[in-house]
Image 1 (cartoon, one colour):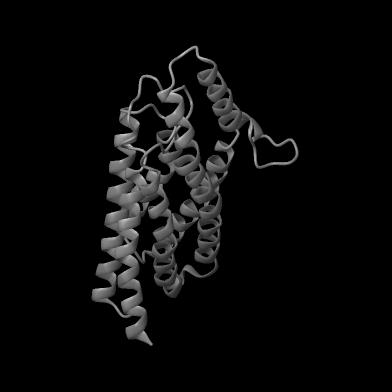
Image 2 (cartoon, one colour; image 1 turned 90 degrees about the vertical axis):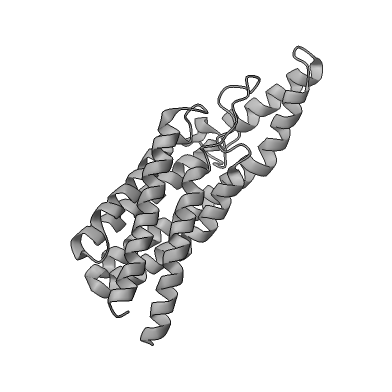
Length: 230
């Protein structure tokens, strides 16, 4: 029924904008701790924003797929959606581990005085988990990244889906082309931003580009619902 589709896509537009804001803000407010060991804590203390953003993300891209597919997106829109949804699993697993697992261990590391036996043991555990622990039972190119391999794989798969989505939007003209470009660029830059040092300008730039692009795209979807039939 057209009315049902219209309502669903409008809700999807709201969710799309909200998920973009949460997702791109997640690495922005990671605190700078002078005692933090180098190379750990990509989403420390703000990972819950990432998790919530990725939880809402599928509903937003489903609304985009629904709208674009009805306007000539067809198979290409389906390919984009497949990659986008495949990325959610590894990204959520990493975010949960980094936010609720490694965060507790980091807290205990920072509470210990340096050069004590407990501090040294905890440092070894951190190194093992962040650099050597891997989800792959056999040698794999990303195994050296440890648990961060989940983040890398998820973001690469996600970026593929986002680029294909952008091509679909550009070809069909179903939504704002430049909004989709900013939204996609935000996800591409996120790979760099999430590993940047706290306070690095790349994090601020990515939050602005991706957040504005996501909200703009959501507004474009909302306006299309108001001016056209579903």
